[in-house]
Amino acid sequence: MTVKTKHTKKTLKVILDSNALFVPLQFKIDVFEELKTLLNMNFEPVLLSTIRQELEKIAEKGSPKMRKKASYALKLAEKCTLFEVDNKFAGSPDDSIVQMAREWNCPVFTNDRELRKRLRNINVPVIYVRQKSRLEIDGGYDSCLNL
Image 1: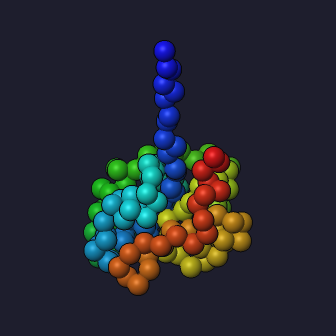
Image 2 (image 1 turned 90 degrees about the horizontal axis):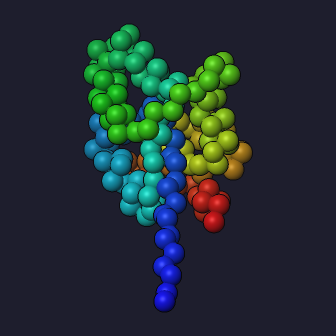
């Protein structure tokens, strides 16, 4: 008699910055399909509540063009798991991304140059748009798998 062990596939959390949700409009890239191709594994797109609030603010008070983009980004955000961030992040939305990426040991999808630099300084893998046509990851995400 053989006993089969059930192997569960690890799901990698990927935190999305607000500008990651503008990528489909800006570069005509399906970010969820591209992430699936890039990572070649199960992943869970995560949107922090601070980022959602940032998008809602832009959708309400931005220029007409930005309001339209932010509304579209909020629709895309529905495909993500929303994670409520405590008020311990009194800083910027970027601060909450850095803190959660460090805590969860997971990659972040952003095109923000300053945020990318901050994340690389703490050895967090960063996913970004390369040559306006595809996604690339800087820093291996193997360390995020804890295998």
